[in-house]
Length: 314
Image (tube, rainbow, N blue to C red; front, side, top):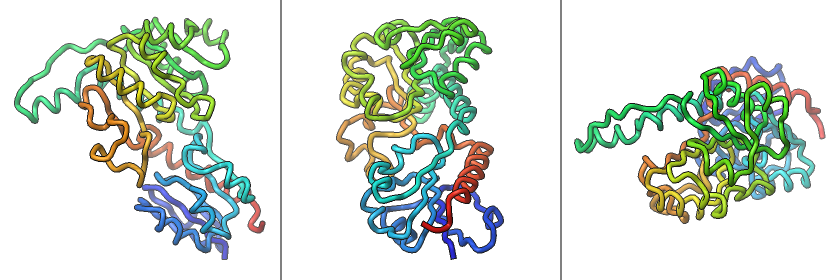
């Protein structure tokens, strides 16, 4: 019988697969051993959980032939080079999380502008009762890094909200978008020094690793709010900590971290020292941006379709 491992904290109905396929569903994987045990006799794998499909796990799954990652950033969740070397077919579900990530980013912008996190701490401590009027998103100067599907949708949504100052950096210029949305193209250094908010929506890769480094951040607006909804490694962690420590009004929100899943030991064992910073300066979430129910349902349906497109035999 063909067996499919599915990971991810969402409901899976047996009826999504035709008869003759057995589903093994792990909602919240706790460690590599649990994944290894499940993969011992599995042909197909829909990776929708927090785990990383390492070379070690791949070596323990001799029957594994097909992997579909629920999302776009495949390299963030598996050793693509090693899997390819082993003859494993790989697919993903691109551009299906655009609305969810955009919605999440805009919500986090409002939360941060309203000083919600500081307010929570102040109420808990009984020391501060914050009621500072928040600026509207429409009045902010916003920079977007990466003008793919999500960056483009962010620009559209900001434009609809009346935001008249939107700058962007992309590896290729977008003249049509510049014209229709009144966007201004600029270098990263130019942008970080002149905007209130920097929103990052760029695919993580060797090319973008530490794209935003000390050289860039030393030119940044001292009150800059950074929203990184892409790979954490796009921002150099050492440069980020130095920037946040030396600019107490600056903040960064990252949907993910430099060490994730079982490698994340919390602030007590954080080599970069970022997790110990106050929440007014740094917020790290566990890849929540795309976890909108409708989006996940659609992404999973597409992942099933991808799996069934693969041949049942090697």
